Image (tube, rainbow, N blue to C red; front, side):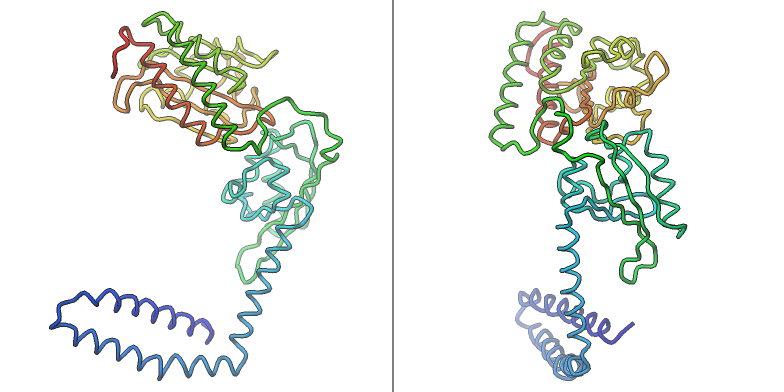
Length: 376
């Protein structure tokens, strides 16, 4: 350990002891003498140890070097964030350590969401295995690599991913720097399907949620009392399109039955409708445990099982985010059914606020499905 590091640890220990002395001011008056002795001892330590060490390190230039290193790190971080090209720093398992602003704009990820998550989660399933293999090869020191991938945010646009090995500072493991370059500019891309703008104001989002709640209330109040299937069909019609690309509603808990499936035009709705709900792990978990699930770019393709053709539902539907909530009037109450919502393609992922709104609507749906509409 260097002298500078030892001095830093001694100084940190001194600061913690001073904090403890401050908290000791409330001791009984008879014990204040002991506290005063400890304070005098700490002052002697500063005068006899810390201050001389500080002067010596300053004279040798160690502390100024530390300051220069920190300034250099701040400068490099600023340059990294302001690079016009999308850049990310990964580990050998493709987990993102840093991603600059251009990278978050290209992938459509909210600021701060990418760090700690695999970059493969932002790619189409078909490209994930190849990207993992090439990243691991670069991290092993087998040379730079380049490959074409497709982002879930814009699957029609090929992106050139260039990977190179990097050893950050004094870290023992090699990291991988990846540069993402779209084959066409955003101005040349075909306009995407209409969807919520990623920079909508809080007031606009709140108004949209109020409109959704109003439409759902109207649908539930006009549904037949206690007819669970009819309630699910009307609720699915309200949520489809305006809030989710796919709406899958299952009735029951111990014996699940698929009641309604609505999807985009031309989507394999019939195959998902024919699927057995008991073969969907997310649905079974929600029905048995009563726990809601919010997933952005789900990693496990088997999370919603397979459709009637044997294909993974999440892969075939190109799901980028999902919400799966039990329909129950209270946390420990019986589950009347399960509601699952998918968003696909370039549509903005479900937010925590939207998940909370769906949780409230799910309780209203559960009340409408009961034989009598009395408060729970």
